[in-house]
Length: 310
Ligand code: 13P
Ligand code: SF4
Image (cartoon, rainbow, N blue to C red; front, side, top):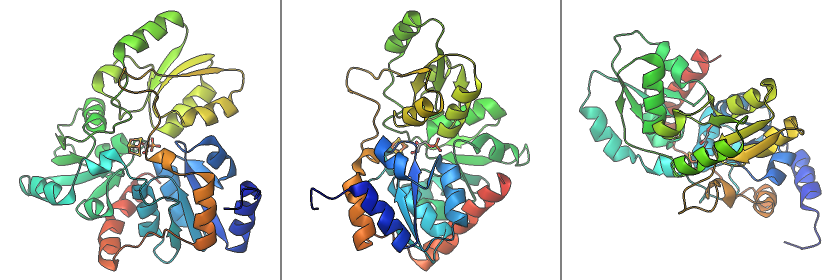
């Protein structure tokens, strides 16, 4: 790329020229969030992908999110700035192993967290996100047997909230498993009035201390509506950008990770850059391509989710 180019201006120009929409997750770098047409959590992003009238969707997020957009809008061109932007949680559940796991429980309904491959969604009955997982489980009859995957932490949280006995796949997110209990305790002593807010992908002992648990958009809304002025935030640090923008006078502190990690950044989310976004719009590559069969089979459980959470 020509180093003198104004990337933001060029991205905006290409976006108009090609009737493209940029959908960005809260974990993206702030400069990407600032030029997106829509910023949101996984549920919000999939709702936007389903209803957009753009010809092209540029997904500033990770692979499973762009796949979900393609499944919901198969006639549109869906682009992901870096195809290597994967997800450790999605990787923790290979579809061929999940198919064997599912075979062990033939009378169970399968709910999969949206953080999984299109192939896994195609093996599911209903998809969910962190903002509607409890609602989706509660929409089913009390005696319905359920397999929940791939996130065991979200699964444990849903079990506690609903009192249901879910069969869990043992997967997890690398970012939400690194928080240090001792360091969070020390920080709370230092900031005794701070609220501790956490994403349900965090481990049980971290969630047990939380004043609020919710999806990224749930956490953001909480910090806007709650009167406290300081928050310790246990999730990927990209969300702090919107929290700070919405409440400029408040203080947001990323929850400290253990000594093995330097920060709470998701290495997959952070693969996307303004340069890659520009190239992706310019060359219309890399594109998400899925077979018609996978699209047809994965669409049903996602649409079921969208109907329940409408
Ligand atoms: P939500 O934004 O839906 O809470 O998801 C968090 C996440 O880990 C996305 O990768
Ligand atoms: Fe996957 Fe975790 Fe990164 Fe989200 S934060 S994309 S769940 S690895």
